[in-house]
Length: 146
Image (cartoon, rainbow, N blue to C red; front, side):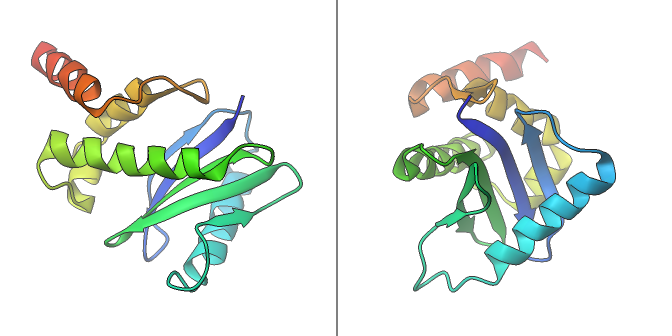
């Protein structure tokens, strides 16, 4: 399994999206884990430092900031970073197409649709679909079923 988790939080550190693909700790330990990731990423100079951070012996963080939101993936140390950075970008592009100029409020009030997008793209920590057009078509079909 290559993707360990996917997180999205705003500039204040409020979690807007979280998906674990590995067994995680108790609730309190999870909150401290996310807070540690937030402190690490938010303190970085985004203009002069890369979007890749070694986080632990087995996990590295790949992240990208879009407006006021950070999208973060925790992956295995041996995985290639650019692949996951491009999938973060694809995820945001699909959300943008699906919602029409996505914003933080879309993620908050339509979280079930955001998780639907996430589940179409990533399943059990593995990348499932890489075509934006195929994803949008599937999502519109699923959205009509509601």
